[in-house]
Image (spheres, rainbow, N blue to C red):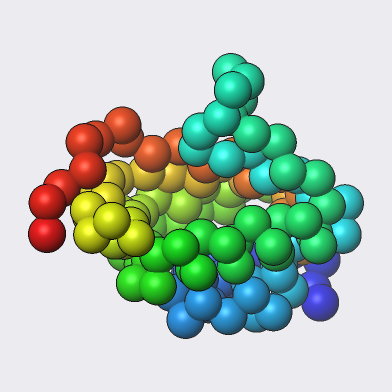
Length: 128
């Protein structure tokens, strides 16, 4: 794996998210990575530690929302920081739909993601 991560690499990662391909997604994450989710009891959401736990969290989203999709609008990398902007869509088990813009802030090390902070607009669920 190269020691830098590019905007094209982030685009490919989001394409892997959209295929629900956890192995391809996780190639970009360091073993000691941390993921701060969009929601949870703490000010930062919920903290998920380590690649294995993060892979399980991503897989759980795909299981709960089989149509989960990130329409990615832009990615940029500057040094050890990166940003991805996207619109997330998906349908919950109760048939209600999520559609909201969001962004990920990444911290990078040696071409891998070590911190992923996810932010998404707090929009009411939509009837399908």
